Amino acid sequence: MIRQGRRKVPAVSRPTSKDVAQEAGVSQSTVSLVLGGKWTGRVSPATARSVRSAARRLGYRPNLAARNLRLGTTRTVLLMVPTLTAPFFGPVYTGAARVASRHGFGVVVSTWSDGTTAPERAAERGAEGPFADSPFAVPDEAIDGVLASSLAVEALGEFRQTPAVMLDSGPAAPSGPFSVTCVPTVDFGVADGMRDIVAHLAALGHRRIGHVAAGVDQWTFRARADALAAGLAPLPGAALLRATCAIDVGSAKDAAARLLDRADPPTALICDDDLIAAGAYKAARARGLDVPADLSITGFDDVLLATALEPELTTVRLPAEELGAQGMTALLDLLAGRRPAPRVLPGELIVRGSTAAPRA
Image (cartoon, rainbow, N blue to C red):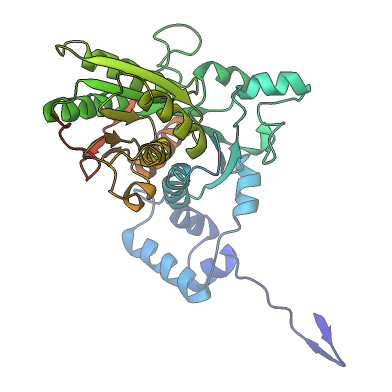
């Protein structure tokens, strides 16, 4: 009872599984089977409907904390991303959280953004566990699984026994302790996307191509660079010029300027990221170059910025939300004792107003 002034009022209690059992006229074990989704073949459909109807009438909600404690699980997944400031990773979280919530899981986020792997940083700081140095650190015993985006697969050594799925990190090594059979992967088809960009620009007549490359040692950017070089190699008279930069507008502007100030500048700039493309736009404008009449520019990812630029950016659309959703699905399979196969999500070339034939 709760004392309120001089009167005693009854405390409001939440309905229990026992209340549901009494309401439906069944045993508590039957309620547990039905509400736990394990009733098929053990309880009749009519009884299952009766139990669900009783739970709705009473407003019953299962005590997840008690259930998780009983099962020895936290039903929490850690999503590791390079940064929370890049617009690309918000949809990755959204997709992962959407699938997780349907299965009673929650998702927390940790970042790594200083160019080193989580284990390297932990060792430098004398920390225990892969995430101890993160401002969003979660002890490994408090999570059931990990989704690691753009992280070197070798870093899984620090995850100890925690089930993990790698996102946009490249296929695992074909042999060794981190073989593809033990580390599920979900990747983008970035090489195909880059080949589509090369084919598009080549069809327009471009042969002198500048690559404004992300100066980040990650699989996704290495795969883009390799595909670009391979795509240009068989084209007669093709030339590839490259300048690296950080993934920010100022650094990208400087890198693009170095290419445009050459005695033999490129007629098109291929940028590893839409944000890098924005810097290339600024470098072109500063030199009085019209996009696309004097210079074609392409990006990668198709974040909202791509349509905010003028002209709108030709880019490769990567399904970021689907990456999170597919990664979470693979992790749930892993937690259920299944071995999910590697998955590759194709990109899509989106042609907009930033590309045209080069001037004669």
